[in-house]
Amino acid sequence: MANALYNKAKTGLMNEEIKMLVDVVGVYLVTASYALALTTDDYLDDVPSQHIVARGTLANVAVASTGVVDADDSLLTLVTGSIVTKIILAIDTGNIATSPLLAALDTATGLPLTPNGGNVTIQWDSGASKIFAL
Image 1 (cartoon, rainbow, N blue to C red):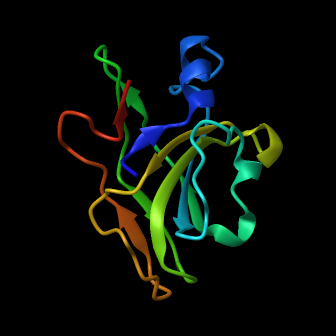
Image 2 (cartoon, helix red, strand yellow; image 1 turned 180 degrees about the vertical axis):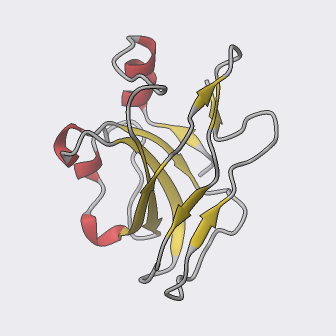
């Protein structure tokens, strides 16, 4: 797999149901056991909780006129659990059944990651695509 947007996210962004600059964007470290389904998974409850190793949020989200999404690097603290192979982004509504999945990233620097109980800093790409591009 390569980094990709979920189908629900594409529709939500185009219909302005997802507002990247207003909504809380959750960052989730996920194990290889989560069977990614970009076309059918739509909400965070489609990612089994036992496959989520750690969670955080994006801070200072910015969207360029070119459709590129960026944010500050993310710090997740005291990360323990299984080997992480993906980073999932989702809008955090406070309810996993209504939190739309946005993107699945598996080619980020540092993946796979073996948690050791320490902090994990996700340094978002500084290249042209940043976190993701539409």
